[in-house]
Length: 81
Image (tube, rainbow, N blue to C red; front, side, top):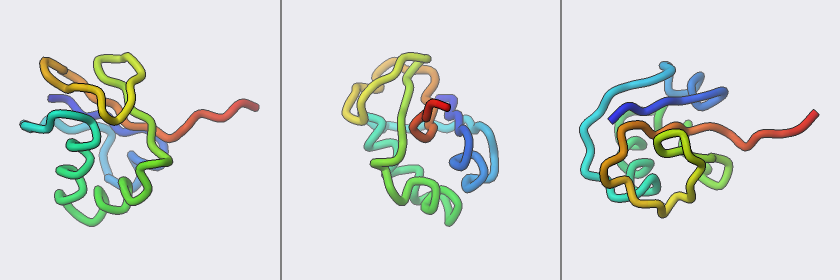
């Protein structure tokens, strides 16, 4: 599965994307798994209330099923300006 990181998540993780194998059932499960990959990942996902997620380019909630997903993107909330 392709994992994409945007904005400060990318900065904390230290890369814009990575390819992983996972058995995570939901984005929330995936976050729990990613937090164990190192300090940068743990820091990036420290406050999941500040994270939005898209699965295969569709905005979803953290409890959305990942079965069959090819891409998961994590990013902070967008603000207008």
